[in-house]
Amino acid sequence: GTCNGCGAHREEVETRKVVHMFRMYNPNTGEHFYTGSEVEKSNLIVAGWHYEGVGFTFPANTGDPVHRLFQPSTGEHLYTMDVAEKDKLMAEGWNYEGIAFNSAYDTEVPQYRLHNPNETRGAYHFTASEEERDALIAAGWEYQGIGFYSSWK
Image (tube, helix red, strand yellow):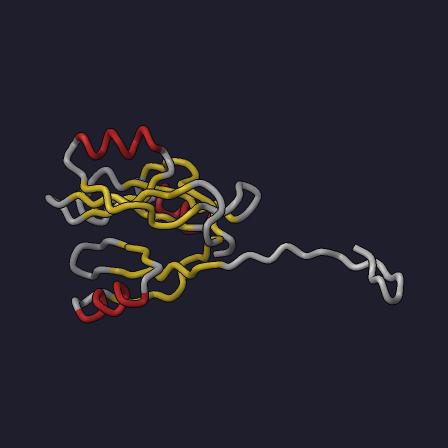
């Protein structure tokens, strides 16, 4: 736009509210878990989980929804943007816990999804680090592509 009083050109800057996703680690199961809830984070710490800091941020109410599922027999959580995968997992006994967050745009930071075929707990992992992704692949994990995008690591 243009300043009416001085005639100078002003840039319009896009601003977005972002939400922090806290990265939690369960030393008993090897699972990494992400939550945007301070209450859930605090409850997990009391239950013995380790807080590893902010794993990533995502824009509030923009982008495609990322669904959170829970496998009650193993305690495993999984995040997916794929509605067909969500429906398939629900048919296999996973509990749908709702939309965890919305993915950032596909021009932002990819969060790589990996699966450890030798584990039933802690079998899924998400990381923005190419080095961590590559180290897990070298250790036998299966790379499953980009799970979603975040605003930053």
